[in-house]
Image (cartoon, rainbow, N blue to C red):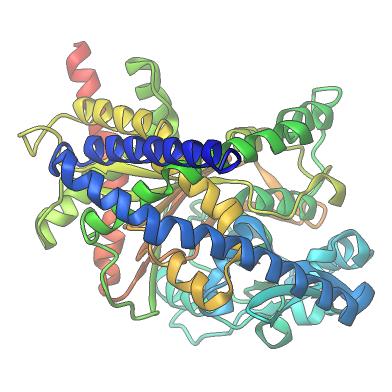
Length: 551
């Protein structure tokens, strides 16, 4: 009895602390919609019948996963390259090719053998020494409910392919024809029976792109697809920087400066951070589950219950006016960021879309990938990174942002007021308990779940879209200057049950925006294009609005 009494006392105290903490959080986030007594009863029952069994199950599954790992290592020996873990597992449900990022580079060249030139660049970079990039020479397999990687031997011919040739009226492919070709390319199976993690395409027909008047230059598309399970946009940008030509810099040591800015935290700091996040998630996981159930279906008009699994893709390219506008707005307003201004334009455009096509919600939940060191990508030393400088993992933290669409009682609120609402939403998101718990599940907890369970959890987040903003470098080229890169853009996969993804990349002072949306949500490509056009129009209006105020 003497041994049991302190244990029972501590257990009761821990139980009461958890009840109070979770009731307080739910009460605050539901704005007092539920009474304290009802919430206390719900939380108490959930701790006993859900929280305790859940954590016991996670411990058992972790041990089971380690047994599977040991067996696979014994079976494959040196060919075994590890079970896919961490946040990389978020991109393993559904069709393998649907979880690949598709990065488009528009190159300028008058060479006749453009395919052979590009293939030799890839061969020299990634195949001359395959041991440098083992992740690019692995295939994915499945056993015992988990995905894992084993070494393979792909050839450059398997990985670098020609885009399908199409019949067109003139000697160049029109932009509408190219969108259809790009959509097909994004959905092609990956090499090695759809098990490799990357491939690349190059078009051999010139595009009707933004050529200078009277220019004889020809533009060709180069597509680089990287599966999200081995890296995110940060990894993809670093990887592509190895492909491009080396650029001479005025700085004496740009590599040292860049690597210092993007280096990882010390291992001990990472361990302590994971322990703190795990403890926080253990305490507040019940309120996260209950809030999900209580809010199910709200703030997510784009997710829907059905998905066609057929995508509509579109793009918008700007030569530099929009970047200049955003910088001018940032300078005039102060105390805001580049991404905040972009999100304001996106918010105004989506409000316009919903009011025309459906009932407009007050806000929608969007997933925003965040990585502080990604800001340094604009200064990446082109052509100078090595394989050892790249960590093939998903580094970004996924934040759930309640993006305001209707601000106040006035649907025609000024963009300045809308920016204030967006700034407030971003500040609240950075302090959100939901995002801390999401970090735990996406980076630590979810990896122990076998595929059937994982698929159910991965599609659960109530978010309408993924919005990614990624800074890019200045002018780059391929093949010793024979293929200058004029534009860069990327389509990101529709992961986690979302129906829309938008990616913004700055390249050579230009703003390039892409949209990928499930056809069940937006079936008309012209409507999807109008959303992108609206973003640029709102930035123009924002600049004019500030000029009027200052006059």
